[in-house]
Length: 195
Image (cartoon, rainbow, N blue to C red; front, side):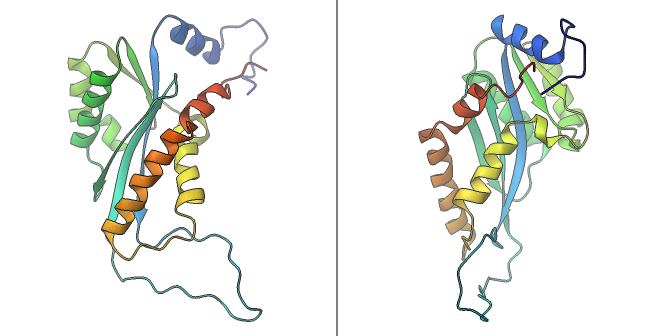
């Protein structure tokens, strides 16, 4: 990614690389929702016959808060309903227990990230700091690639009949992501290149 700055200037990417070299762990965090409606992909059908899938008329959903670190670790928590500020603080607490040293969380500008409760939690934990991405810039957050992988490769054309079936499918997805080391691959792809 070209920063638009002349060569040799102190680009944001170089700052991140320097921080990581100094032992800071970057954590890219985001939330995603999954419903019973499923993710439609391509399919085969008899010519002239539109394939139909009957779905339950149910608005239940699961939400996941997740993060990948600069060294390729993957953390996630899935719950029914929506993610709230208390869930964000609990997830930060989990990250602080799992990651040693300074933790810099890179995240979007969602209201739950900027809430008073979240900011108070961050203020109480010296080794935790937040960096907010510009608005409407999901391409700057590698965790979005994990969500895209799950929706495309795991949940594509999958129609859960119940929230428990969806939860079970997601449990398998999180294991698969760790098994194929997807976050590690993403971070090793050098997403923040100086070119």
